Each structure stands twice: as C-alpha cells, then as structure tokens.
Image (cartoon, rainbow, N blue to C red):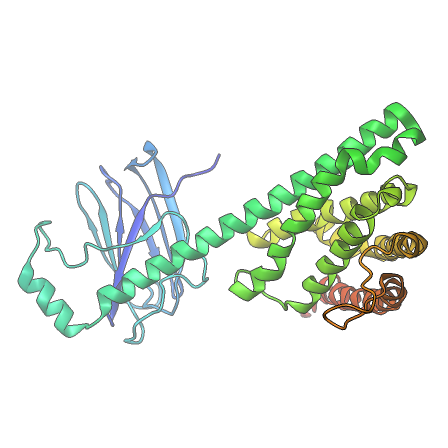
Length: 372
C-alpha cells in the first residue's frame, strides 16, 4: 500500500527553514529532524481525505538535529488546520533550494504566504520589515518555484516525446510483422508502401533530439545525434523516397526492421533515465544491441546507396550540369560514391562512441568488504 504525502509549504530565513504541513485534525505527529533530512508521519485530513500521511525530505545543507543537540532546536506547533515545523540551520546562509536533489517532489511547494502574520491576516508593517531585512527574497522564491515548474515541464515533454517515438516504431514493426505472418515473403516488397509515411514522419521528428541539447533539455553534444539523424534522413529521403524503384527492394524491409529494433530499446531507456529508474535488462540491451544491429544497419544503408548509383546515372536526378547561370556543377552518382566512404568513417566513429559508453555503463562494480 502506498502511503500518500501531504502538501508541504516551505520558506526560509538565513538561520531557519519553516515547513507548513497541510493537514487538519492532527493529534500527535511524528517528526524526526536529522542532520540532512526531516521525516514526518501522522494521521490527518489532507488531499486524500482522512488517512495516514508521511514524507521524508533530504535537505540542501546540514541542520541542527534533535538527536545530537540536547537543546531541542526544532519547533513543532500543531494547529487545527496545519502543522508548523521550524528547523534551525547549522550555518546562517541562504539556500538556493530546500531539497538536496535538483528535482522537487510534487507535494512540495513554496510558501508565498511567508509575510502573513500568525493569525492569518496581512500585516503591512511585517512585510516591510521582512523585505528590509531580506531584500529580494520574494523574487528569489518566485524564480525558484518557476525553475522547479520549468524543470517539471521539460521532464514531461521529454517523456511524452520518447513515448510517442516508441509507440510510432512499435506501430511500424507491428505492421511489418503482421503482414509478414499473413503474406510471408510477398509482403517484403510492399513494405515502404505501408509504413514509409510513418517512418518519414518519425525520422523528421528525430531532429528534435538534435535541438534538445542546444536548449539545455538534455546533456551531451549536438554533433553525434546530428550525424546519426542526418545519415538516416539522407538514406530515407534522398535515396528511397526519391527513387520509386528502390522502394520495392527487400533491403528496405530489413533496414526498417533494424532501425525499429534499435528505437524500441532506446526510447524506453531514455524514459527510465528521465525519472532516474535503473532497469538492468533495459540498460544492458541499450548498450549491447548496437553490436549486431549497427553494422547490419550500415550494411543495409550502403546497399541502398550502391543500388541507387545506376538509377541516378540513368535519371540524372539531383545532378546539376554545366553550363548554368550559377556556374556550378554537381554529379549525384559521384556524391553517392563519396558518401559511401563517409558512411564507413561515420559508422566507425559512432561504434567507437557506443563502445566507450558501453564500457562506462556496463563496467563491473567493485565491492570492497571490510574484514571484521
């Protein structure tokens, strides 16, 4: 059974942190203040009605603990509509946030009623005194709450994006599998006709992954995802979409299977990382499936490009010949031959990058046991 957490509103001064627990009808709450954490549990009336509530909060910096300080530095006041907890900081200082982690629990809020008097009525003199003693505090609290909300919105957006991509590639693989079960090998030649539009849409959506690090939504560089996404886009749009005769080749079926299998693991792994959930089998698959699938993917992409060279020689598609008003010439078949060399170099670079990540993520943990 999951025990709910009450809404907790916090505020601070240089010397203390106050927590207002939004529970009514509390009788004898359990409050334990440790050096870096505070624990609370009690029965009361909150957001879930009459129930048993509890929370544990890891604090940003050390505070005076009830276990080590005989003077009982923590003040707990039980009122009809709330429980007030005042905790003394070990060192006078303004905290950038109350939590040790950058992520804020959903039940933790900032107490914007900080400048209200004890009886719940506004006191203009009290507000002026506080603003004089702690200039800019209200603005800092507002910015912090906005920062927390922005971080929550980013997490929700990233989770929805990764979930959307996962569902999309699941759809593509499911359609291909169902058609293969019904029609067997005859379904291979019509793969692009049935799932090509979905693959193109999902591929264009992947350019958002190039922009996420630029906006600070994710960590990491821009060059590697740009290289991978653009390489796929070149094969999909400039080789398969642009040449109808290539769309019916069996290699398209195998290429779509490989791409989809990679993404069916990658996107759930990213969702687990957003919420800091380590799933062993998912992590292993993420950093192991590339070993067979990446080389096979590069092989299929190379076959698509190689088969397209005579087609582009025949049609002269994308080729610009002289003379023209720009005095510029471009021969698409020659570019495809050069791209095959670049694809080999990019493939080696990408696999080297994945190997380094695998060495870090899957390295064995060394546990040192002390002899008693």
